[in-house]
Figure (cartoon, rainbow, N blue to C red):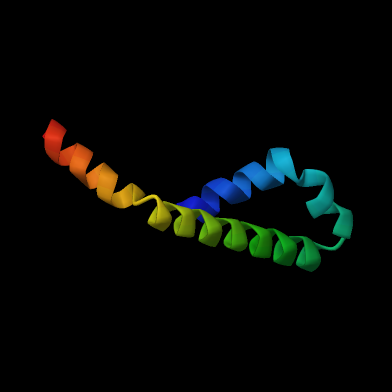
Length: 64
């Protein structure tokens, strides 16, 4: 899910000038994929460090 949301955010809002500066479909797709994948991996690592999934599970147990 991260990669889809990041892809949409990067393509539409944040880095659109950078992404479309390559002027070739294959390059645009490749750069967008690499940036989205790298960002998604970074977000997952941050979630591991702050124990996001554990906290969410704990919260869900409390409210259910």
